[in-house]
Amino acid sequence: MIKELKILFAIVVIVLIGYYGIEDLAHHEMYGNIPKPDFNYLDLQYDIKEKGNPQNGENLFKQNCLSCHSLKVKNLKAMMDENTAMHAFNVVPPDLSNRANIVEEHFLFNFIKNPQNATKNPKFAMPPQPQLTDKQITDIVSFLKTVAKKDIQGEEIIEDACTRCHNIKYQKIEAHTNPENLKKYLGKIPPDLSLKGKSRDKEYLVAFINNPQTVLPGTSMPRLGLTKESTEKVVNYLEHIADPHKEERNKIGMWVLIYMLIGVILTYSWKKKIWKSLK
Image (cartoon, rainbow, N blue to C red; front, side):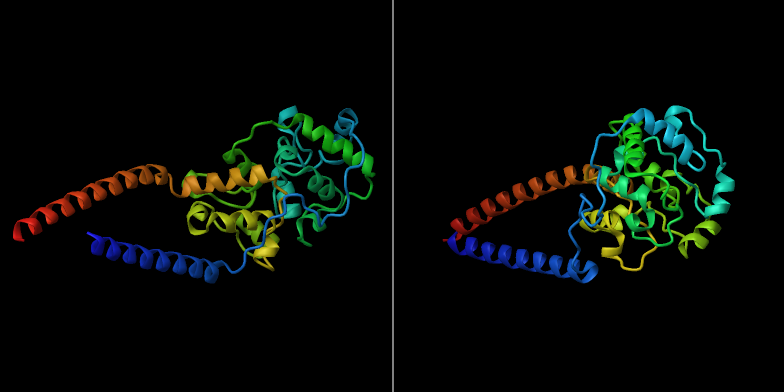
């Protein structure tokens, strides 16, 4: 009995060392050292210093943002239609109904002041807004926060933040912008996201969405400024659509392990009985 347990213990130790050694090595070789995400966006120097006025923010939004951006939650249509905007900027400007609830407030303030700096993308389509004071930007952010939906699910965040450029074909979602325009804008057509939740691990996806340049230097994908909660919802959604039966498979796996354990116990009992009769 003791001899068999020692052999079993040695096998378990060897298997665990092999598994975790190979897992860590493979992860490091594939992804390198993945940087920790910064959901406070502390590299951005400007900050909101006073309380915003949402009423004034609504007027400022209509004067400064509505030429390109719609606000469906208030039934406000962009003055420039999508095709005209796409040919002007090579990308369709997003509707901003939920933007303030999926993007970190400090990031959004800096984004309006200087989109190229906030996104870490010098070719980002939206121009800086030097005509707006810090107080006026604060008012616009305050207005957008008052109209944004409070509990937004991962699919909605993906639709809001990603599908201007990315297809998700397995979900029958097509990018809002034409591939030809995206190629002019970004240098190449962005990848389909249908299987990203399976081809990349969670740590990589979170870090990449948080700050693409720190994970893949030179990438044309801009930093989005998503909050930690929004980022996790996006990654969870990508993992779900890439492998929708994962949870079911894990449940079955547990029953398989229990079945195998019962088999081991019965086999050992049988072996013990046989050896006892031979003595």
